[in-house]
Image (tube, rainbow over all chains, first blue to last red; front, side, top):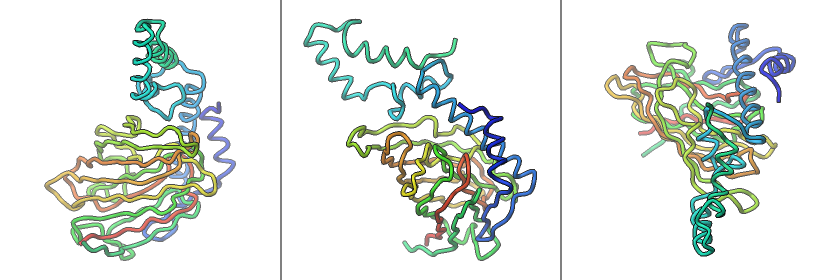
Length: 117
Length: 187
């Protein structure tokens, strides 16, 4: 996982200048605009790295609720149809408690993405 | 309904693309009550980045696209190339509540050479000095996580009763590698 400082260094090595297109005209960003843009990119890339680290290994995050519910996130809650199917089988098997598949699946997500204390 | 092409902008390793009223034949005022922006193959230079837009109001001409508050919603339908993951989902990380950041269309775009984002954005009555500015957008892109087709639905309003006449599009990280945005007036 790269830090913001590492991203900054890499981005400045990659880009000596940046351009934007306004109404079809290409303009070079001023020094202050260049630095602000590179800083923003580094901040966002570091945040992406941190998010990926959480998705891979779990942990506490203020965004724990979105991690738990975003189905693109590995380890998020199963889909509602899948949860209902788990409940059906748990009831059928007399396991509507902490040993049931639904409880275990939901608990696994809650345990992976935790609320900060 | 008729569409009048106002301007097409093509990215080529560009940090941002912007349409500004009053220059180079661009109108973004009361000439039309409705404007559409069509995105064709917006390809990001940086993996897992997000593509979005923000505006400047007329009292912030030439500003940094960072003062207009947006309240929005964002949901998606998705399905991957392995035939799995079909479903609908609200994406709380992509909405805003009076936020001034660029409003995301996508997030975590995949950047394989054949993968990009295409879609449309409609903004209604941008020159109104009475009403907030509503917008709706939809499109499709390839999500980084396992080659998902992700069909996005974004809507909201720019909570500003000052006219808006400048709009900017960019990735949250890195350049827009390639892609074209067509601006239309709707009559």
